[in-house]
Length: 202
Length: 203
Image 1: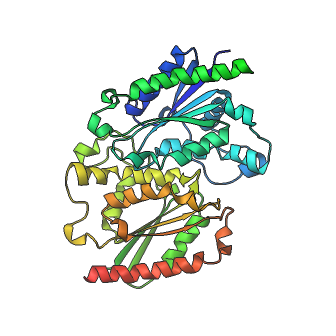
Image 2: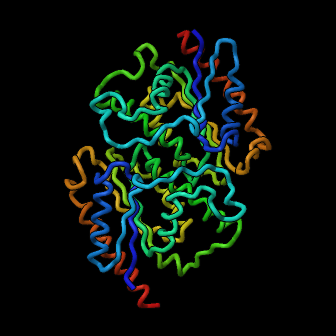
């Protein structure tokens, strides 16, 4: 069975810096033998979490829209690459809207205790965060990491690596960045190899 | 001229913990000279930023939605408050959408080099960030603060002029009513903001 790699692009901007970097990662994964899929959040129809806590009772979200389909795909993949540009020191509202909708899985884990990821499951499910920022500050990604950690924890993924590139305003685009595109491709190949080795070892 | 207070309630849940905290602060501001307006973002119809960067040329957003009216109110206000619950270690996506749409102010300020508020109003605006979180971790608000600082920065409210009241360990609706200090702290904050803005506006 081929390793499944799912990329989620949280940018409102099609084929911008972040999605291009995600594409390079997915190309690397495909070159490594994986089956890849890309979801573009801006093309989907879903609303943000309503904070109604109805899921705390039965582990289901009362809002039936595309977010459920995305979480179904997340739970079925071996590797999850979540991509968002940095807007105002954080991830985009589109991606935050999706992440918050995972509350029903949190409820299954911590309130209803019907969902549990073993350490072995988590080891075999790798999550990566892919991001670009216009600013050149080193700390420009810091506000994004906690929400990304939250979705990886909530869906049973080990937070495996970041592929992040700042200073896009200066470089005038990701393709002019000295190393990011190559790094993304290589990390795509590598994660598939690592997951394949884990499967072989059993 | 009345003191204009603009309050954004960033939660999708009406009258939950973060909005209650906001109401308590606003309660401390009640005064004949003060006009308060509260906008629940859940009902404000503000779409996320599209990242098109058109505002860098047009000096306005290409989207016509609830942000049009909020844009003008943000410029007119003397005190701007934003409240949000913490979801998944960050602000609610409704609040993030408002903050990201402030990109038009950033473009105005840094790309087009135009004023956001007239020079004589600089230093005479105050900001407030209010948040509640179900988690009891002390660091649960850390990821929210940088976005909030950027928001206030681009609308000409200085870092030093932002007040914070962030209450953790309140989850279920109404939990904040049982918090030992939140209500009193919020009322005191509201009063002190009015005292401070009076001083600034007179100076």
